[in-house]
Image (cartoon, rainbow, N blue to C red; front, side, top):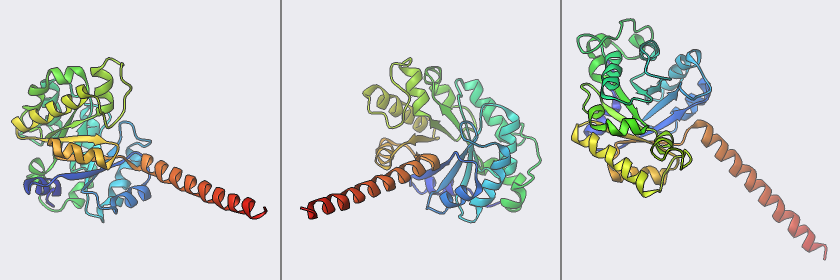
Length: 269
C-alpha cells in the first residue's frame, strides 16, 4: 500500500498544510491539488457536491500526489466507509461530542479486529496499491471534529479514544457553541477565550499523542496556530480563494481604469 505522506511529514517533526474543496468539480480539484498542498480534503458535509462528485475528484487529485481526505456529513457508517472505498486516506468526522462517539467513529474507519469497517475497497484497492487490506488500519487517518461546548467538556475522553489519530477543530461552530451565539461563527478567532480553547485542545492532543488540526482563513493565522502546537492547518478553500482572487482582480481593474480616466481629465485642462 502507498504510505500516508502526512504520517511521514509529522514523524519528521514538520507541520502540514491542507487544502479544502467545496466545489463539486474534478477540474477544480485537479487545479487545487497541483498547488503544493500536503493534503486535500473534500467537504461532503457543507460543500456543493455529493458522492457522485467525490470519486472523480479523488481521481483528479491523484496525479499530484497529495494525501486525499474527506469530511463526511455526520457520524454515519455508510458514508464513512464509502469515502474510504473511494480513496480517502483520512476521514474528518463532524460533531463528535463524546468519547463513545469518538470510539464509534474509529470503529467505522478500521477493519477487524480493530473496527467494523466492511471490506469492499472498490477504487482504493487500485489507487492505493497492493495489500490495502493488510495495511489500511495503519495508514488511514481518523480525525474527530471538536466544535461544541459538549465536546470541550468531554475533550480528554475524546482525545483518548483508542485508534483516533487526531482532533480537527471547526472554529466557527466552536465559537458559536462556546459563546452561545454571542460571537458570530468565523475563522481566525482573536478573542482570548477562543485562543485559550484552541490551546486547550492542542494540550489534550499532546497528552494523548495524537495530532491537532485547525481550519484557518489566512496563512498568517495558520502560522500562529502551528506555533501554538497544531500539526496541520487548513488555509481557506477553493470557493473562498476563487472569490478573493476574482474580487482582487476586479478591484485592481477598477482602480487602474480610474487612474487612466483621472489622467485624461487632468490632461484636458
